[in-house]
Length: 93
Image (cartoon, rainbow, N blue to C red; front, top):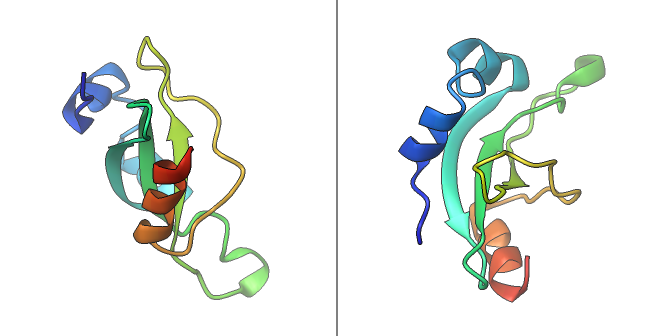
């Protein structure tokens, strides 16, 4: 079964609040699935890249989504492009 972003938003309305989005520097959300069809929340974000006066840098971060629609801990790796994140999911993520 394919998870839709609207279903995840409904399950976690506080996570997707405007204030959270601004605090974390999130720009865009998507749901993508790996080759085993497990869903991931895929976020384009500037999170924490502007610390210590640095220029913010956009990148992509992934959170696995559990069977009860829980948003799990971030995947350690960050990705410079959406295509790089998709490739990681395609080869085994």
